[in-house]
Each structure stands twice: as structure tokens, then as C-alpha cells.
Amino acid sequence: MDTVTGRLLCGIGGFYYVETADGEWECKARGIFRRSGKTPVAGDLVKVSPLANGKGVLEDILPRKNCLIRPPVANLDYLVIVASIKQPEPHLLVLDKMIAIAEHKEIEPIIVFNKSDLADTSALCALYRNAGFTVLAVSAETGDGIEALRDRLTGKIAAFTGNSGVGKSSILNRLDERLGLETAEISSVLGRGKHTTRSSTLHKQPGGGYFVDTPGFSSLDMERLEPIPKEDLPYCFREFEPHIGNCRFASCRHMKEPDCAVRIAVKAGKIAASRISSYDSMMEEALARPDWEKRL
Ligand SMILES: Nc1nc2c(ncn2[C@@H]2O[C@H](COP(=O)(O)OP(=O)(O)OP(=O)(O)O)[C@@H](O)[C@H]2O)c(=O)[nH]1
Ligand SMILES: [Mg+2]
Ligand SMILES: [Zn+2]
Image (cartoon, rainbow, N blue to C red):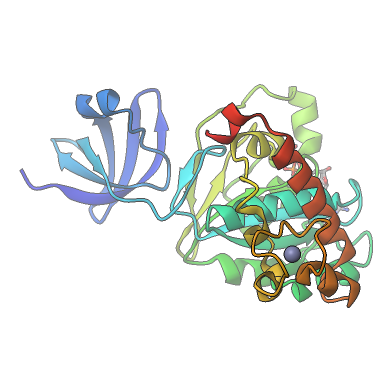
């Protein structure tokens, strides 16, 4: 029988919901999947054999462009990393860790500073723009900057990450009011953690593309599950790139080695102090990680 290619929107209770050119299909995975250890995740392009009544059998997963473990999602165009300028204060080490994970997974990060109604975001925006990133300042409260963010994300698959309370759900609700996601005030009434799930869902954007919403996932999970090996770390800081080949030692870790071109660039003000300080923390953590963990 002919198979149809579609996009896996979510998996719930053993069923997979796949969007194809002829609508949505409810699928069971073929047994071979469970034996092969391949697990379909939201965002996967999959092959489906149609049965009757909108049901089908998931036959195969096409090669992935990229894949995150937590949230479990594949083929992202963007990881939208949200920080707030106040309440809570931005935590640059956490932000830099999220950015580095995106770089390591080859997912383009978009940095969003939310709550621009509470404080001036321009210095932080400049810091990250100078490092080579797309940066947007928004306010989910006033709607400022939301249109520009929507324009960026239309037609793309974008997942949101960032610490609790920075306003991810508030921003998503602004981007698409049909989402109706819980935000802090509401979820504290209902009790936190009630609706947590480990699976991801792709929500269709009004103008094309998808948003990924994964309740119950934190940047800490991500850090734990996606460790960056020390050899790769310098390449996860994109503004180091022009300098890396110019160090005295080819094996330079850009820590305390003599004539390190990265450190010279820091002294010259070409690399921000906060960025190199995040790098140092991450390198120290990578060096301290036990060997069994490094092989994961
Ligand atoms: N002043 C101001 N407050 C905001 C803004 N965006 C969100 N908030 C508030 O910040 C709090 C947290 O917002 P949420 O959208 O729930 O944050 P979240 O990132 O989804 O948090 P978790 O779901 O816990 O990870 C809520 O009280 C929001 O009303 C903003 O742009 N300005
Ligand atoms: Mg939320
Ligand atoms: Zn160096």
C-alpha cells in the first residue's frame, strides 16, 4: 500500500497524531519501532500507511535535522530562549547555557527579553546582538514587540525555553490567543504540576509553522540531558569563532593558556566579560564531569 508522509504533531497514550496533506491521522506505531528502539517525537516527518476512517499505521521516521531530548521534539528551526529583564532578573549563565545547547544541537537560537515594560532592555539586547544573535525585546503585558516576534516565527517550527516565570506562556498566548496556556496567576490557583507531561505538542501557528509547548520542562533538565563535551564547547560560543584558529596552541582550551586569541579578544572588548565568564563555568563543569557521563 502507498505510504503518505506527514508531520507528527504529538503522541498520547500510544497514539500518534500525524498531519498530512489530506488531514490529520490517528496512528499506531508498527511493532518494529518498539523493537528497534526508535521513538517518534513531535516534529518528526513520518511515513504512514492509511487505514480507514482517518486512522493509519506509522511505518517509518525520516532522518531528523536536529532533535532535543527535553522537550522531546525534532526538526526545530528555532529555539526561542526567553529571559525577563526583571521579575525574575536575567540569569546570564543560564541564558548562555541554553544558547550553547542550541548551538551544539544546530538549532538557531532566538533570544527574547521579555517584560520590557518593567526596565530598559537595550544594554542586554546590544550584548547579544554584538555576539551575533537575533535578539528581540518584547512585553507580553503591553504587546510591545510581539508582532516582530510573530513575523520571525511564521512558517517555522519554534520551541520556547527559559526559566520559570520569565513569561513563555504569556508570550505564546499573545502570539496566538487560541492557545490559552496557563500563566503563573492561574496555575498557582489550580496547583502547579497538575498538568505536567513529558511529551511535546506542535501547535499550528495562525500564519503557518508550529509552536512547541512543553509544560513541566525546565532549563535545568536540558542542561542535565544535553551535556556539551569540552572539545565542542568553544564552538558553542559563536563570537569566539574568528579567534579560535589564532591561539598559540592548537589544543588551546581558551582558559589560562599563553597567547590565547580568545582571551586577547576579551581584553580588547570584542567578547563580553559575561560571555567568557559563562564559558569558564561551563568548561569547568565539562572538565569535572565523570567519564561515564561524557560518553552519553
Ligand atoms: N510586567 C510584566 N509581567 C509579565 C510579562 N509577561 C509575563 N508576565 C508575568 O510573569 C508571570 C509569569 O508568566 P508566565 O507566562 O506564567 O511565565 P512562564 O515562563 O510560562 O513560567 P513557567 O510556566 O513556570 O515556566 C505572570 O505573572 C505574568 O503575568 C510582561 O511582559 N510584563
Ligand atoms: Mg508557562
Ligand atoms: Zn585559545
